[in-house]
Structures are given as structure tokens and as C-alpha cells.
Image (cartoon, rainbow, N blue to C red; front, side, top):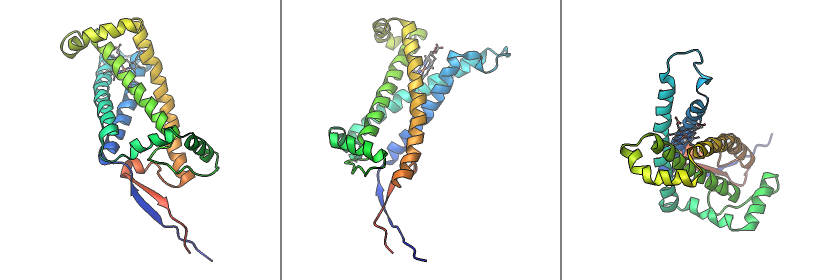
Length: 225
Ligand code: HEM
């Protein structure tokens, strides 16, 4: 029986900081969705309980993860623009090329491959860009909700901007509704993101979920006997 051996080339794609902040952001978002939905429907858990503190603890957890997400969002934006490796920034070149969009869509339909300028294809880049903007939106609306409840300390310091934003967004109820609606974007994103990460690894045989764990991508080389 004839056997062929495929060798793989190793390439560093994600730095330690990018990987650490990816998983911290993922954890914060999952906890924020779970605690946020509990805040909306507080009797989902413990309906028969008289332990009214449950809602308070869930709310504290939401705020801790919320402030963590604010910090992560800021650091992640900094890393995108200023990290030593320009592998993420280079992907923008593909966003500006119509041919790259077409090549990526065709590759998803099993027609050829896109030779990427950076680490993301244009569709991925734009999806991550929009989800980062939505994370920033959740941080702003979350801080507005926070400042409307806590009038001392940080809440007090944020109050003048928060009251302006509350009015600009159509009132406190509207801020809360938007904060709630956008939560669903994260739920949909998480499902598609996990599916695509696994599918991508199977379809293209490289840059699967392990790249964001180990930092390394493995590209198959020409098979040799
Ligand atoms: C991906 C990020 C986030 C998600 C998915 C999320 C989700 C939610 C949801 C679903 C609610 C309930 C809204 C309702 O009443 O129906 C909520 C409330 C709230 N969130 Fe967030 N949130 C996020 C980020 C943040 C951040 C960054 C902060 C602040 C630093 C924050 C602070 C708050 C506050 C203060 C409330 C109101 C709590 C209350 O009314 O008792 N959230 N969030």
C-alpha cells in the first residue's frame, strides 16, 4: 500500500496578549449574557425562593464582568493598532479588495482558496469589527445604566456625560431596551463564531480553534511520498 506524508509549516499568528484577551473577552461576554438575561427575567431561577439577594449578587457579577469588558475592549483596541505584529492590521488590505471578498465567498462554496494578506479574510475582519463596535456600545450603554443608579464615586464622575447620553438616546428606558436587544447580537455571534471556527479548520485544514490557544497556525505543504 502506498502512503503519502503531508508535512506542515508552523507559523506564529497570535501573540500571547491577543490570545489572553480573546479568552478573557469570551468569558466576560458569556457571563454578561447569562447574568444580563437573569436581570431581565429574575424569576427564571429560584422562583419559589424568598432569598431576594440572588438578584443583587447576579447584578454585582454583571457589573464586575461589565467593568472587565470595558477594560478588555480598550486594551484590545490598543493591541489592534499598536501591537508589534501587524498580522491583524494587514487583513484590512483584503477588506479594500473586491477580488478578496469574491475569493473568500467562493472558497466557502468549495471553489478555490483566498490567499490572505493578514490573518483574517474580509468577511471575518468586518464581522469582528462590527462585534467590537457592539462591545463598545454595550460598554457605553452599560456605564450609562450604571451612572443612573450609582450617583457617587465613578457613577457621579460619569453623570454629566451619562445624563446627556440618556437624553440623546431617548430616555433611560430606551437605553435599557437597546442594551437588551444588542445582547441578542452576541448570542447569535457566539453560535456562528464557534461553528465557523470549527468548520474553517475542517475545510481549510489550518488556522482552526487551536491557533487562538497555542498561537500557531499549521499549513499543509505539498504532499510528498
Ligand atoms: C456584551 C456585554 C453585555 C451584555 C450582553 C449585557 C447584557 C445585559 C442585559 C440583557 C441586561 C438586562 C436589560 C434589561 O433590563 O432587560 C443588562 C443590564 C445592565 N447592564 Fe449589561 N450587558 C453587557 C455589558 C455591560 C457593561 C459593560 C456594563 C457596565 C459596565 C453593564 C451594566 C449593566 C447595568 C447597570 C444593567 C442594569 C441592571 C439593572 O437594571 O438592575 N452591562 N445587561
